[in-house]
Image 1 (tube, rainbow, N blue to C red):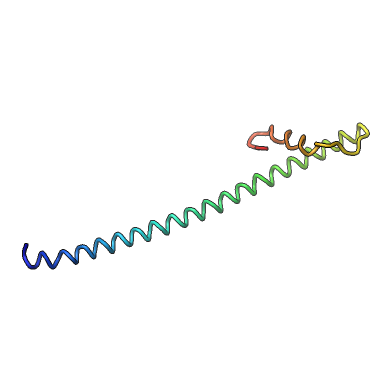
Image 2: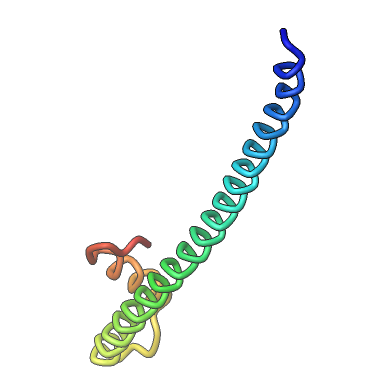
Length: 95
């Protein structure tokens, strides 16, 4: 090996180490940002689904209360469960 080739070898290793470190930091930042965005989107979707289910269950409860009032009953045990089960029959709603 010549003298110039042996001097170039440590410089080449340093360059590869810098490139590897840069790629590692970039991959870490991309991974962190991806996980944060995924968590935020999951929260928003769950909140939207919860609001929809609340609205549908409230509507079912109101309809059930009207039906019970026609029968002369003030309140029935399990009415909330019945409303949620009726709401779960709609497309995309999971109870």
